[in-house]
Length: 248
Image (cartoon, rainbow, N blue to C red; front, side, top):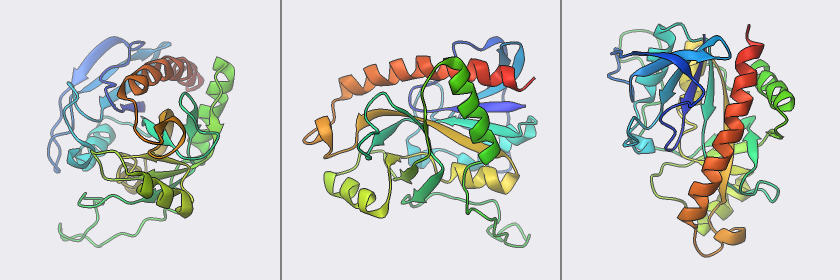
């Protein structure tokens, strides 16, 4: 089964029908919310709101281990993350959808592995050279093309801790490091999926220029951010509808 993890203020998928909910507990605690399982285009899809329902969990307070574990328990083998971001690269302005292919982790204080040796099992070092599933990324790209929606193929996601947004100086450092977009939830989610053998990819709507860039040079407009996010979600839903149909 495929799953979608919803990002900032995405607490449901409007095109998910015949929905049932599964409330799970895991060895790592409770996930952010009950998991909704329903149909998109006649195909079963699981949905989990990353920040809870209602939106209440800050990025550093999300129980990423419980979220991924719960999805695996339900039989999920592929996860599409929806993760709103700020654009750093010049052509990644508000309204652009990005399918990143690399990530740099600047977060801290988050439990980022199932294999830390505390459970008596050996420490496991998973390969993370390519942090996103290439096959899943290709499937999303094909779905976007069929849906008539443009999506940028590739980009380096910088994951900061949050919940505050970054300073202009921090964004300048991210740019020097090679980051093209910045968010706060990409890690350890991607790495945990890899440890569980779940294919993982992220659709990242750029909802604002990152701090110090473009129209965010002096301040980030919250009102414009919300408007851009709403429009981007409508486009992502079109892609997900085609994506679900591809899985038949």
